[in-house]
Image 1 (cartoon, rainbow, N blue to C red):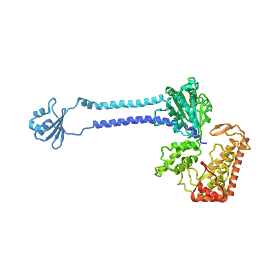
Image 2 (tube, rainbow, N blue to C red; image 1 turned 90 degrees about the vertical axis):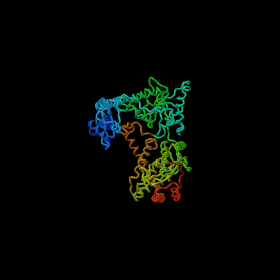
Image 3 (cartoon, one colour; image 1 turned 45 degrees about the horizontal axis):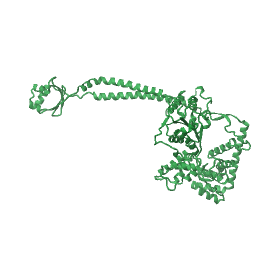
Image 4 (tube, helix red, strand yellow; image 1 turned 135 degrees about the vertical axis):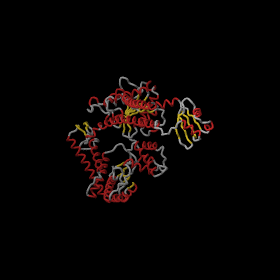
Length: 637
């Protein structure tokens, strides 16, 4: 085991320090850049003027008299003279007298002066003062700005330090119609929605509950597999109730400093009480709500202090009946008992995987904004997707639309959704993964072994499709369809499933006299299923109806320590698992031996066409006297 995985905080802390240093360095760099910019502007403004020759006023008077001057610009005492040959010279007039009077004194007559254009520019006193003090003012201004800029950065860091313990919850405005979600946007979950409608009813009209002496639950915890819609239901409650909705993740409470999480909990509940009635939603609460007393972190464990503060806020000395706490997790088994007791999380709402009818409703919701073709049959898609969560169904519809857009079609067709099912389950086709002739033959016999065993054994599900085209990490795959959707499975079904999983292993050994790494995942599936039969479901005659998996024991570094059953029982469990696997091998070998001709025909057809749909596959079975089973929903092996 790589113990370096447990030292992740060290680089993280360095990252934070480097981030602070980087911010300070950026401040210095910004100040230096501004200084250089100001310096450049100053040089442009106060740059050295061009070297213009200066002539005495007496020479200027002679030039005017001889008609050589075209224009004179007067700016105070300064004269800018432009000659007819476009030469420019400078001169100065007498102080206190006008230019014409000065020129008359030097013998210029009125006629010669009238032929010369004279322009007078009056400089304001402000500009004169500004130009004089600007060289001294700019350095002073830069120094003042430099210190102000640095103090601003320091003040910003100080404000961040002061707000370190404040809650980071996002608030959803009840009047925000663009992001509003209601129960109409959530399909399935009928029982869960009924439970949550009471919460909404209380927030809208609490009087009818209080008048009869009823108390609304203080907390509701949503549990279920990933992708079943826990967060979506919480948003729907906020949308239906029309109250402020504070939402954040459990991991946002915890920081490296002790006490910050507890401070954020206090601040969160303080904000919610000011906005009451309100809803607080904590997603993935298992990040902070795990069972206390694990022995990790010592007496000042930040996570435990955060959890303690949540327990006090939910049911402490100052109870508040207008703030409802909702939480979601897919690990309810690890939560602290004090957190999920009545009085804190009074209601536990379980969200199951959707059944066929629910899946059809979910597909219709996700298909609202998608242009569907006339051949779309969402009921058929729902039948072929058992075990899909709401998130999987969303991905399915989205992948179907992407496939249609990729082929420049304006509508989504049924075959787009059928292809999307396999893409969601297995991943995209790896068309670049070219098999050699030998590998292709091995894969074909491997998948033919899976398919034939499933088709012959009475308690295995019917085969829907067989393919040797690589998808995701699978070199080939066999898709099965249960005859009817079921919640319970029997021991006989598990035994046939194990034999079916081992069909590929037996096929390789039978045909080639050798085995490859191809059946590795099949062996893992079969072994895990056999061990679960023995240790969890009491399906072993030797061990008996005893649940051993997860019975006591302490988990450290991913391994169970101090198990509550003896080594003798563990030896019996291992022997029983091996016996079930060996029986599955014998069953698969018997099926493939008895139907050798059908087995070889299926493999040869796969080598030829690479993919066998149900109709083509069943024709081969019928040709060899095997009656195919009915199909209704899809399952992957």
